[in-house]
Image (cartoon, helix red, strand yellow):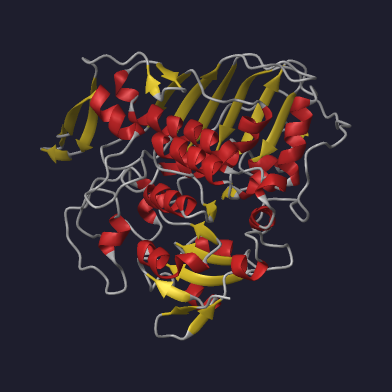
Length: 483
């Protein structure tokens, strides 16, 4: 058996694919897992995977990552994930990715090309092209994949899907979904002050493929979600949770039209609140219910849909602390929290539906653990006999494209039109070479003799060029995706 020596620490890793032989890992063996981005959500993800061998940890901020380093003291530590793959890549079976959104695709694509199993936090990617690429790579490399929207594995979500697909509320032509996020700063302008980079942070690696900007503490840790270069705002963060049973139950695929509006938006940061409308064409009927045209409405930042008829007084639409959905059917209305939790029909009827979707043990409610363990189970099964986890990239890649289209609807709202989307070819069909985006760059307000004076600055962008960048990013020099 081959041994790998990790640096000067004297740690020996025997890869599980070597132990098991013949390229297949028996369920009795443990995976060798590497965690990339372990200061935030990556830490609970890895602790949900501690049944396996966590052999390598990587984070650009070693101070922020220190608690996770202490959780797994025997794991080898890196700041640069590329160095990690170069040094111990052959000894790693699977990778957990919980970095900022803008680096997901780079790391996941590299791992897939190295035939590593991949668990990647939501949103799966930062751009639509990146999602399409990961979907394709995952289909070619036959590894187990999972997006980190843990409610997808929940029994509650399965019940919502079964109720709808069994025809319990009839044909669904209207859905409303919401969250109270953001709970981090958004709608901000780029800081003008410069700060010294902490000694424990590799700022260049944090930026990765994003354009260079001076360090400021407002960006990281965690606050990166609200900045366009690094995150996707409240929509990208929470729609992967809240809209998941909507996308799955209604077999949505690509929307044909999108439209968005929001509180003030600028070139740097996502808005404080937003609304988005998706329109989906009729889909192939299911055995027990038709799937007609449907409009899906999204609200965040404290905005909520109007209360539907039949919802009892006193019911808090944010009772679960995450968000919720209302499915308006031709026979009944279904209400639930994020991940299907608290599902009920507003008629008061309790459906008697024979379960047919696979249940994951201990997945009742909305929690970490079952989702990660179901991915581990899939990793240990041979590709030809594998039962894929339900948030695998074949599902979550196209779903993530829908989520990122919601982000684009907000960024393109100054066009003042309903945007027609050709999902197959990843392009809008009603954008002309003359279309211009007018986006606020800075907001100025003063009082002169007690009277208001506004000095807002705007930038005009060619819509076609800006949209191409939003759909498929140009990376900073030295960073690139596979062709």
